[in-house]
Length: 327
Image 1 (cartoon, rainbow, N blue to C red):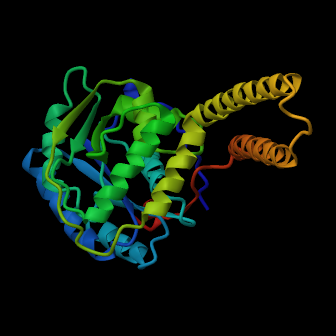
Image 2 (image 1 turned 180 degrees about the horizontal axis):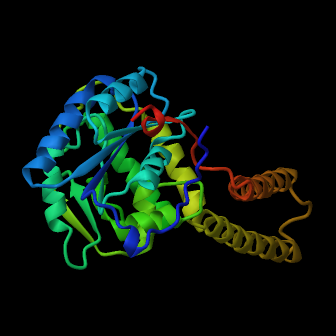
C-alpha cells in the first residue's frame, strides 16, 4: 500500500515536467460522468495545443467509480487514477492529486461537470505575468436555491470565524502555477482546505467569470449541517478567533458581574437588602458555571485539533493507482 504523505519535495528547475497541464479531479458519486469529462477536457486542451494529464482521485466513491477509472486509464494514456483507502474528504483527495501532478500548470475541478471543461483555456490565458492563481467565478450558479443558500451561509460563517472575506461565487475550480502547487505540497498540516491554503500563500490571484452547468448526476454530498460542521472545523484549524471570542465573553461577563456585585453591596450598605436572595445566587452559579464549561469546551476542541496534528498521520492513504497496473 502506498502511504505517501501529503508533503512532497519542491521540484527544481531541472526537474520541470514536460506536460503543460495537469487536471486534478476528486471523484465521488459521478461514475457515469467520467468518460464525458475526459473527452471534453481533452478536446478543450487539444484545441489550444496543450499537452495534459488527468488525475482522477477516487475518494472511496460508493458507485464503483474505480472500475471506470481503470477502464479509462487503459483507453487513454494521459488518464491516471488514484484510489484512496477510504473516504478522506474532497480536499484530501485534491491534495493527493496535487502531490502527483507533474504539469507546469495544474487545474482543479469537480467531476460532476458543473465545472465546465470548455472554460479551462480561459483560465490558462489569464495565468500570465505575476498571476499565479486564476479562480473561476460562477456568477450564474446552476444549483438549487437550497444549495446556493447553504454555500453562501457556509462562506459567510467561515469568513466570520476566520476574519476573512470570501467570495461565495468561487470554489476549487481554477488554474494554479507550478510554484503554487509546490508550495501547497510542502505544507505539513493534515487538515486541508484548498481555498484557505491558497489564500495563505499570498500569491497574486485573478478571477475569471466562467459558465456553470447543472449537475448531471447524483446530488451533492454537502448538506447544510455538514457545511456548517466543516466551517467550524476549518476555523479551529486556521484561526484562533474562537479563543479570542471566549476571552472577550469572559471579560464581558466579569465586568457585568463586578457591576452587579458593586450594586448589591451598595444596596446592602443602604439598608435596602436585609437577606441575600437565594434565586439570584443560584442563577449566578448556573450562569458562571455554563460560561466556564463553554470555555473548557472550546479549549478542548483546540486540544483535539492539536492532538490530531501531533500524531503526524498522512492526510490520505493511496490504496491503488494506475501507474502500477501494467501501464
